[in-house]
Length: 355
Image 1 (tube, rainbow, N blue to C red):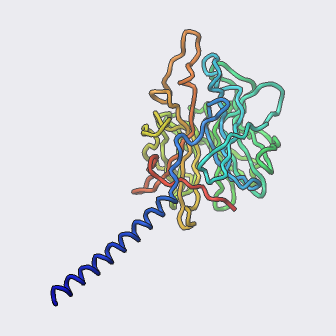
Image 2 (cartoon, helix red, strand yellow):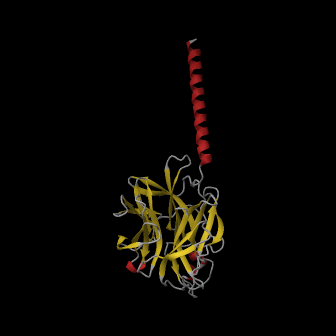
Image 3 (cartoon, rainbow, N blue to C red):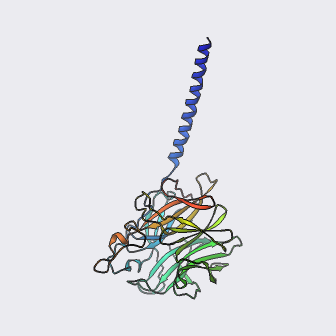
């Protein structure tokens, strides 16, 4: 009798264990089914195949995510870096929380006749309007050159843009704006000044219309570009493109910046995610449950290059297509031991709708 009771007890223990295991597996499977692995690449421009310098913004009218980017003319055989000039700002949108993106066209930002050049947009939504800050160059060049200014536009729908002004910056070679609203309501804008050795400078505004510049570098040292400022995990962060991945800086006040390590400095096994990640955006959003913040870095790569800046022109002075083309990728930023690390191959990518 005792053996029978022991056997029966063991049976019930095993039954409960199997039930618990089944329930655990069901929960795990449900979590896996909800998890969305970002496609790689996240986006390629189907017209020019030269998408670079992406920035994401929620379109309140369409209720969809929009990606604005430099639409380099990568499929154009032309001298030297001509494919980086005469380009407009491209648009792609996603209605499924960032899972898929569709090309929508280019922004009409014309402010004078001719074929002119637009680079590296940044856009914010403030008091019912979208504000776009973009590098503008009159005309197009075969080699790196031209006067570069930061142009400011406003829009109510992300399609129709009104030119407001050029930012009052004395330098003739400024690009790559990034904006962040501070706790007191003022806006700070950082940008690359090529005339200062390609360091990051700063301007301030109360209303995004009138600006006061600061003559001291916000981040100096080694030349870099593509600064991106954001708030995440109790700190302010800045990532900058060092042409070998992105350098991480941390701050408590956006004034004093602590230089940290690199992210996106290595290739992954994902399609087109090589050799390293360059100039991009960081989007901080709530997770699926609306309980925690997640940060995604959206960047571009040159998949046909051995290093970000490598490649040779042919006998006609033209870079081959494999060197010119670029792809947009995404990774998740995670706070670990007081700094940022980037997961690029196994993370849940989900951009929730915004209010």
